[in-house]
Length: 107
Image 1: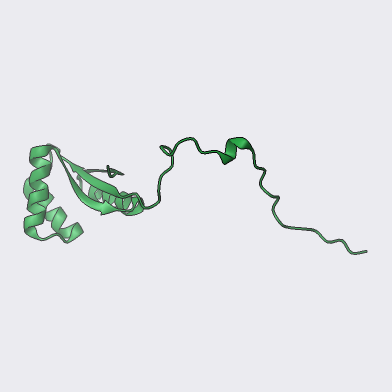
Image 2: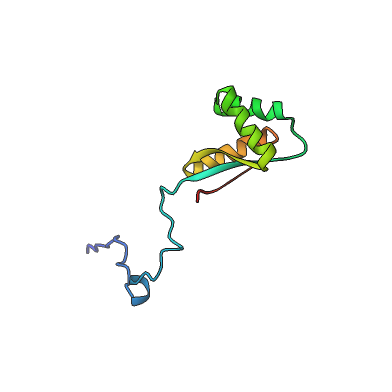
């Protein structure tokens, strides 16, 4: 006697609650850009912050110095843009250098 089993997943059950989308505020497009922010801190020297931007990002000295001055005078600077995973990696790497860095959705 031979028995055949179907391994196909069950069809999804649709209900009115799952078919209607009332707002898009909670939906996030996968290509929404994110940013990495470096915050001012009382510990790191300006020359060190400039060196980190040159070393990690490969920024030329004038760009690294401008970003460092934004951090120093404005309290923060956006240092990179891109997909969330890249911004997470940048923030974590900058924290490894001892900088106060976070990432967030670009506005």
